[in-house]
Length: 427
Image (cartoon, rainbow, N blue to C red):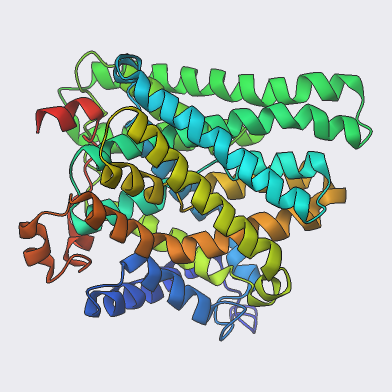
């Protein structure tokens, strides 16, 4: 009876996608019932409960099979973040660039020192420290939309997060030659592999962005095709990056930055993804919750706790100090610093790259990065919601509409992309 299915029935990525969406909706609803709890935390909690560390409804195989969905979600989120980095605005606002460089240097130094105290090899410590410079755009964008945050801190922090990820990738590329040298790599690999990865990702991002911009200009009289055009371009960029062994996460960020810089007038940078964009956040954070490994967290808790404290202090104190230098209020500085604390997408991608390149150090890199991402993604959403309240950028009307500062009514609201610094100044 060949027409009957085999047993047990295989769980395909399509089934896993549907299951993640359903349990994510349940987690989001439960968070909705608690006005103080961000929906991201709800997504992660149900992911943890249903994952291998919980009930096992989401198996390791299901999680691995869903990786392509996670890559697409992260790529679109990073593209969206790249649109918030207006190079022309940044050149007119050197204080933001200085703040980002200063904060990145302090974060690298604090994390490197902590890892050195725990006797992590120096070069490995430098590689991990470069990864921890990055911040999570998904937490910032989602929580900002959820609580209706609008204002100078919200917009400037989007720029800082984009710069964080850019600097992190460059710092990571700089440490690669040292890693290759200490692991006995040949001179060709030492010099050309990092250059190829960085330069190739930048070039591919520029090419896709230019093509996207030109096609968008040609069809701007048919705006109904913009969304499909953007998603298609990002998926092409990811596919090419994967085949060319470039960064599948850095390329979409570059595409967003270049598209924003190329446009003389808004063509696709003001595209509204709409409520459907919520799907990508649900999948991303249910996956993050399911991937949590509680045993690993407990085993390496001392170094993870020290790293979390050091990185959190580095980001909050350095941004506050830079704000004071430029005569901005303490509330503004501390709020921006707190919003940089969450860490996820790019860190995971860079860690995976490092694991593939240096398998002899895979266990250390995986435990420290994945473990710290677990902690930061758990504490990140409540910290972000608190930071927006500290900044005073959650208006009373937004609170009233949501039944409190963190109510989740906005989960079904449109998630607009027209959040550039220049637009923030006009509102």
